[in-house]
Figure 1 (cartoon, helix red, strand yellow):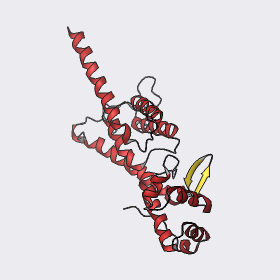
Figure 2 (tube, one colour):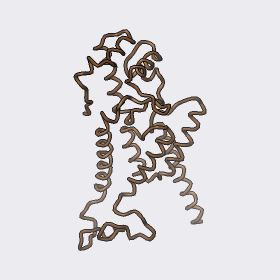
Figure 3 (cartoon, helix red, strand yellow):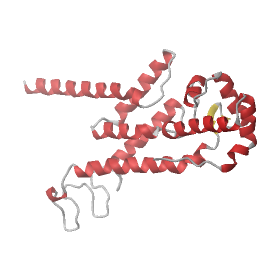
Amino acid sequence: MAWLESHQSLGRHIKTKRLSRKLGISVPSTIGHLHLLWWWAMDNLPDGCISLLEPEDIADEMMWTGDADELLSALIDVGFIDEIDEELFIHDWHDYIGKLVDKRRTDAERKRKSRKTTKRSPDDVQRTSSGQSEDDPRDGAGNSTVQYSTVPKEDITTDKFARIEKAYATIHKTMGLKPIDWPIVNKLLEKGITADLIIEVMEEKHAKKIQEGGTVNGFSFYTNAINERFNQGQRNEGRLDFLNDL
């Protein structure tokens, strides 16, 4: 269970009192609404960017029943939300949960590698005298011996994940994927879906959604389309193999 650093001075902080006055509610109620936003953001906004959210979205997550626009304006006025380069961010968000986000990212990668290694029993692998698998395309120093390969020691899936996250950040103008999306991306990669295909679908589906006047709130929006595109490619390859055998 994740936790959020909450300082005892929050109740008497000038920003909290100002927000309380602007919203016309008590300080304890103000603290509660703020924490509801922060708790939700821990799982859904790892970079703290709220620019893609409507004021009503923010009000919903804060369980605020008053005017959504007034709430957002008040949060910006008192400094709980910062406007940086025409983007809106929760104030000092990375300072509070940066370590948590990094830990979740590391845990997701560790679990992915663990699932991958358990698919093949160590007893079934023939190894060299140095303990290395005979079919491992690396030398004893961990460097790839595959011709033209320039990737030493690293799992190539890590690079694919990084490419996808960078593309997602560029498309959505955020700092990256949400923690809840990391396992989804890893499963797609483990299935054999290429980073190029995933990025291509993201670009196409996002552009279409924006044209329609909508917004995309997470990577899961693309999952079905990615799987459909991949499965279609598999079927097409099967047909080509069949024709080649004729």
